[in-house]
Length: 442
Image: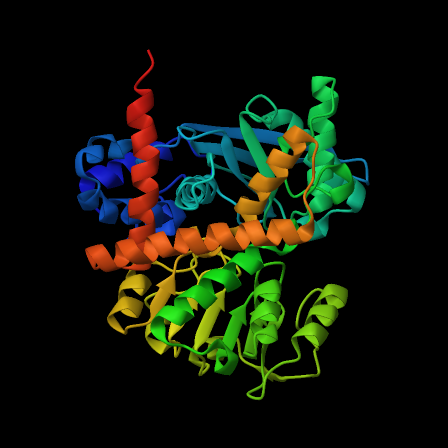
């Protein structure tokens, strides 16, 4: 990373209450999410042509809001949580991105996630910019009432910058349809009118879209199948290892299994299980929905978490949190293809190792864009009050994902670059072209 990039990154976090010493992403052994994103941008600048003069735009979030979220707990005491909403870029349209509730959420992380949303939305060519939000909290420690009060207070605090034409939140880690329903209702009460389009990923009965819950996993499968065709990998004979078994990893695993693949290993926060003959995915999905993790599932062997990276497989799907594939374990991976279901699961150093080992990496900014694509469909349906069938949703999603992947693959071949760099080339050019056309105000 250049000195200028270091300085820009440091300036962006200078006022963060979560960074008092040297920010972790400026340390050589731990770039952190924002540092990883900045490296990814630096790698693509040589391919931007005359648009490179605008590249600094990509390295600076448009707006970052840090809010205090005080609530009264069930025991009568008052607790304070720190919340964030970052709008990275809105040159191509309103901000779009999820809200996560997690004890490790930081401003650096939310900044990076918002930036990756800018890239992702531009890569699939939906008319959104990038945004992201979060609260630093372990939601499992809260009652349902406390969770609702926290969600509503957070929504009120960020209400000054969100809206159907300004910034549209959606579910992410530890948030779901119910959280979105509370957010939509809170915003609507404050506005004095029902505004279904302020969030996506809502319950269908409140203006949500059919197919939204499965969309990210379906997108992972769609681009994975397209890439497999290009490298001569027969999915019906493939072995698949999945990290994270929620809406993304679980649905992707289910679709790969339905296509004939064997899901040989699954890891989540509860542990790691393995079965060479293939895990019964429907049974595992039912078990996880009832028990919260794979821990205790009797249909596979329990193995150590670290051994997950040594599993013999054809396809590896990291669908948990960022920073999972690092320089420390990338050399151990035994797969032909990595499909990033999670956001930022692979560090730049690990990316280089996988590239040198001829392991194809399908980057998050294209592989997991199915969720935001169907969120776009939901937003459009809310504006028109006309809703499509699930078959129509899935068909439109598959078409957009295939077209986006085809463009990325072609750029990667033309420039002899990785699929990640190719995706960034396409997305950054679209974002910066919009920036150039709009000009600077005033």
